[in-house]
Length: 282
Ligand SMILES: Cc1cc2nc3c(=O)[nH]c(=O)nc-3n(C[C@H](O)[C@H](O)[C@H](O)COP(=O)(O)OP(=O)(O)OC[C@H]3O[C@@H](n4cnc5c(N)ncnc54)[C@H](O)[C@@H]3O)c2cc1C
Ligand code: FES
Image (tube, rainbow, N blue to C red; front, top):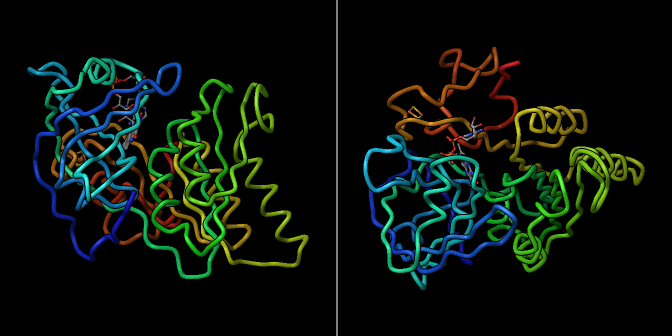
């Protein structure tokens, strides 16, 4: 997988058709969708997403956002990793090789390149791991990458994901809420442990955190990173309408001191934000 850098300014996107190359079940309820789509393979960056028309007609009316999980510009191939949670993703799982899917992308602002020499700490909750694997692939070479991957149960920890993280040179640590694999409890406990180990070794800083997952997990991650003085970027997940900044359907509270209004639009201002830029609903 070869990822390029995000160009400054607003990303260019197109509405394109992707031809299904592969639909592979990679977990109890999770699928990897491989598509022939040279534009997205060339233009996509870690943390960006595509807005997918899941049905053939108007049902469901709204597209569904999915992160770019893999790109191969040489082959013109892109990959999406998704979990079936409702009608849209259930329809996606019915796609078969040779069928076409309507996509808008690449959309949004992805992750920034971490400064040279800084370690990259990835914190993933559930399918939130999808945009983080590309970050390890793009920027893992020549730096320490610590991937903290959490899920509710062992079955939801996808071997495909762990394989790619290890291939990218990451040290992978696992956590499950039910204790069936890895450290029992939330993935943020692993982050707390990593921060404590660095402090015990007398090291301050030197790490950048990229996180994606449920809101409560992100909030805790941001707080822990702030206490350690580690810069932290969050990839937010909001329900979306247009996907391009026109409807405010993806509004998320902005941090009180952020210029430009009380809300950010996750689709256009993000989905990746510096943790200090955003607030929380609850
Ligand atoms: C930028 C972005 C990137 C994403 N990347 C991925 C990805 O790579 N892989 C993946 O599996 N999912 C990803 N998601 C989440 C994905 O978009 C939703 O799971 C999907 O839209 C659900 O559609 P559905 O029709 O199947 O479910 P629906 O019928 O619309 O909803 C089913 C259930 O899921 C909840 N839900 C739906 N969408 C969201 C959401 N965005 N955030 C929180 N809860 C939601 C609903 O509240 C409901 O309980 C991403 C979301 C965003 C915003
Ligand atoms: S989904 Fe319409 S503004 Fe973000």
